[in-house]
Length: 358
Image (cartoon, rainbow, N blue to C red; front, top):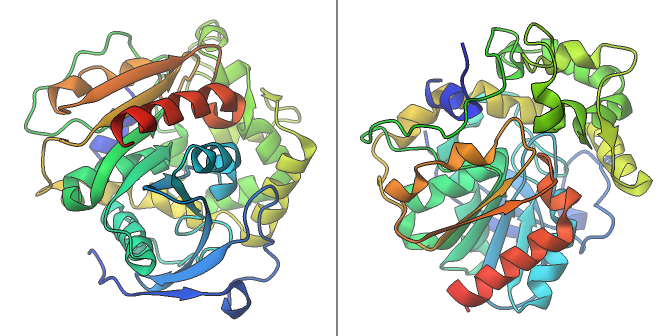
């Protein structure tokens, strides 16, 4: 069966919002986690029952950046500087379960509604009425949900690699390209569900995990991926099986400083917080059941030519339910687009912000 990650998620209690701004010295999070290099000093905001680490820079209309898995606010280090320099207030939290932010162990404390409420708490603590929301990977799912759950708090949305989920009241869109992934019970989304199993494999050698996952080429390049036999771990996107090889596929491309920070942070925190996002995916339908179906705010989708997991074709049909949508494809880039092609991504984002938000 061929399918897309979008469809896998599709078929798979919003807490009260209280917030307070805390200095870094007052925060009780695991002190083995260090603030990110190449980033502003983080502050901590008490929101939605947890302390969230927030990096921010600049003044002007607020632009909130939401990272994916297995990432951190640090993934937006290039975009924070560019957006602040363009006259906007860039805000990037370590999301619930990641980095310096608290990581509840109970997966019931993770769902799309809760993630959106976390962002509202940050905005309320900062006195921000509306913001542009920018998300990559899982962060993309969050930002596309914001204008449907909280349209009164949104100035605009930018989805990087991640397309907006199609409302269930619309007929399915016909993908222009079939997914290259062969969907089986070994698909990584499924193998992440069992508590403890993925944590053990991902945490056995954290640097090896990041050298494999945060890479390009191989399974992260659509052209190369299409040439791999269909009965392989690669084509089934069985990340945990590939990671247990002596030499997993892929070509690391980030600097030693960047890879060191990702590694030391996840060595301190473990992977459970981020994996709980996958374990909560089955509740997305319930959270979005009564959400607004159309997205009425200015929107931008940025795809990556070589992204296997979230290809540009996954955005087919978004025009059916988004009133003001632009699309841009970053060529010669895989899934980690804002880190692989930061200059182009920065230019596309700041140009769009200047035209649409001002």
